[in-house]
Length: 72
View 1: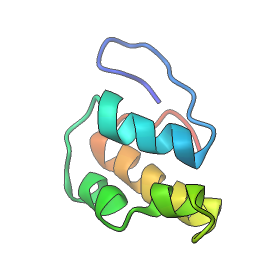
View 2: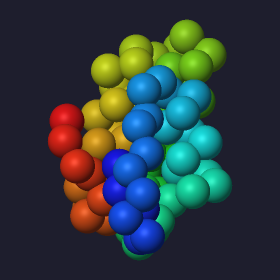
View 3: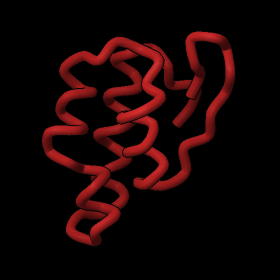
């Protein structure tokens, strides 16, 4: 991930993704960002109720929408 200041942030787990979505999101908080939070994809993965792959898909979609994804 790349912040608005150009800092690169590695997100390597659902817990990291949830924290990033809630506290450090540098881009616009558009539809995909809201979906990642509303469906609680990251939270559910942390709790073992959904797969990390499902959480990753939601997070990557939000990052692409905001233009902050560096690579997948």
